[in-house]
Image (cartoon, rainbow over all chains, first blue to last red; front, side, top):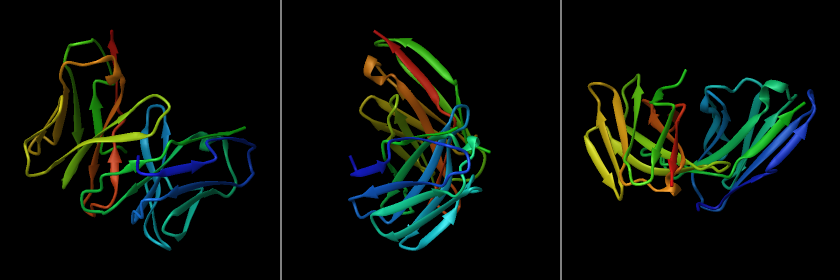
Length: 113
Length: 111
């Protein structure tokens, strides 16, 4: 395993509340990614980071923000959670952007009531 | 929209049989990757094939790539019950620093 942990692993929250998911890696990988996985949609990229304080939007970034203040941590924040954000969220890392073999965390199951 | 689309969406085979799944994509790529996801777990990288390669092997896995048809196939030979999982193809874009995943093929290998 590439030493990627996600916290929390499960969370139930209410509509309108802020939620922050954390991804922590011990591999010193430069790239980090947040995906959401929903039935019928596969994995969709939310945001990614190509270095400390360097982030960019993915396919489904609306309603999400990210921060990366140090190499090992990548935070995903839902400012005001909605039921459509109920999903399983995966963090991934990669050493480089060339081949981009990605290593995935175990996932966080988020339920927004 | 998804760059890669897998076919079939689901596949059920007996242990010992071969499993073949296909991936089609829309735009030019630098490489195509295949990942496996066991139920309730994160994805695990299986194999990467570059755009200038046509075939690649890794253990019981064989991947082909046809860039003229924008398609790839993953063959798992002599399947085992432990191969039961979802399999995803992923393609990089022009920038190369992010992947787009297909919807996956669910494979059930019956003992």
